[in-house]
Amino acid sequence: MRLGEQLNATKKIWDLDAKCLVDIPDEKIRQYAALAILAYKWGRPVERAQVLHAKTEDFSEMLRGRG
Image (cartoon, rainbow, N blue to C red):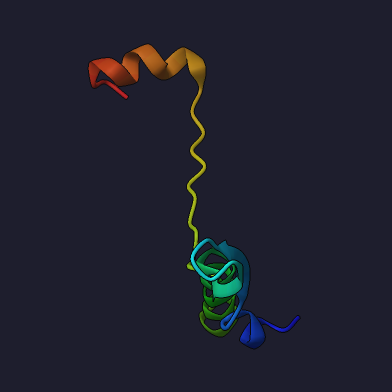
């Protein structure tokens, strides 16, 4: 099933009054499809990371403000 078709996804539940199956919107599938479409269109946000290196023997001096 295509993502565009999943935006209209439904599921069947039993209607006690009508005594038959009726279609209702499948909100979970629709929401996942919408998120996937947006991810394909806009891409993921930039994730930045910093890697810092320091000598462990200098750590106590750095904490005291001498480093």
